[in-house]
Length: 448
Image (cartoon, rainbow, N blue to C red; front, side, top):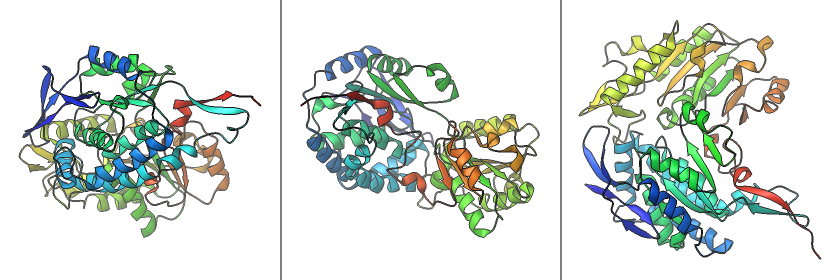
């Protein structure tokens, strides 16, 4: 089996506290060494004293690390070996990890420009763009490997970073941290601390600022703490206020199911001014055709979970449905059902299309880690209200006033007007605002 170490001061260390990381098919893959809460506190304290690195030096390291992550054998693991292990433990289709290799390489080379564009226009003669702290803690997720690109911006901005990896995917951040160290990042600038929830809480308490990914309960618990940036459910939406032709249907299917439907930016609700039932039926026919395959199969496009977990997610959907109807289920009756077993004890999570008859149905706020979309009617008289609370809102409409309303609504974090393909890959597009808005502040400056 592989070994996932605790990594501090550039050294990989074992721990008395360990757990076994299984693949989604139940096969043991790695031993994970876990750092207790006290180690989190001591690590943050030690990293505050790490010697400085010049901005140009950091950016060169980041660019080199991105190349190593994508192309090199790191920690004895080739890029393809990384992709296979990452898929096996996370349950995300292997193609997502393969795409992440190139995305990480390209984005790391642009980090200097990316963070430069996040500074206010007024910074210069009368103001300085300064860090709010020195150590940044990250409680990372396991839903998508590319989420780790976010905290690299903190390194570019001059932060030392401590990462507590997600329980299902410590593979990606370990490869990234090793790549950074091999590229020449000073050892005191990066740490990887796998650990239990108590260790994650200790990291958040000890770090100057933290980024935490979590559920609605996590968002509620940390709301109001200005030292913590919380990224929770996305509840991304699309409004179809144009004829639902083939091009529109293709775009909807992509936004719902791309990357296995596991991103917070995947669409979870579609509203339409047209025939919502007909639109839902068309989506169900297309999405139900996506194959359920082992997650390491080159053709895999759907996420895979341990069978009991997959069945539990479907049960949660049924509970949220109330009077909603899943229009995909009839397509699965003779084909293994909605959670077919595809590898040992692992089951694929096939898409669901829930049709509801009102725009305020409570199920519209439900977000699950597979292609699951709710389709509802919408009328112009309802305005922007049903579309609020969206990490990303796509407006397929000719109504310019509606676009302006969306841009003026604080609960809508990204507005896309028209069919914008693969917009989530743009490294310059803010994800729930620029990270620098949280990490930095403008300080007044006057001098000769």
